[in-house]
Image 1 (cartoon, helix red, strand yellow):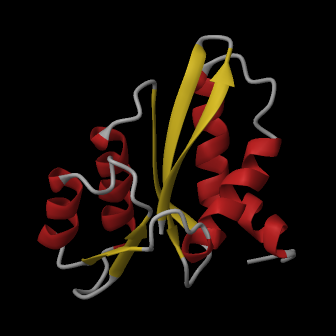
Image 2 (cartoon, one colour; image 1 turned 90 degrees about the vertical axis):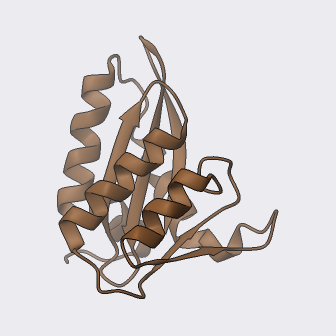
Image 3 (cartoon, helix red, strand yellow; image 1 turned 30 degrees about the vertical axis):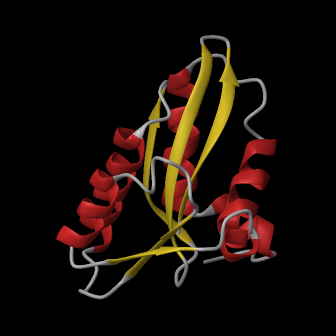
Length: 141
């Protein structure tokens, strides 16, 4: 699953794309940039593919945002032997696990001043899975 969220810093808005492995409930790829474009989501997907090395036929689920429905993102998925998946327009339930992660983690993103601070927190969340385990009521991995 993948999605994008934005965070305000003293420097301005920062966008974060994340790829969640639904089986392990861990962030396996992420990217941060000042622009919310296709490159942001492709960089997150690249990291996820490098980290997980998925078998052919794995599913990458996203919403209908223009970054995810772009030809480049679809081609990246297909070239890795994966299958793209999109829910129905306007339905957040199919991506609820990702939406919950982003909403919970956004709560402790307040007060960051620089994008480097945001990057550090994202790296810690991805490494330790803190936000999602907290949101799902799990105390350990």
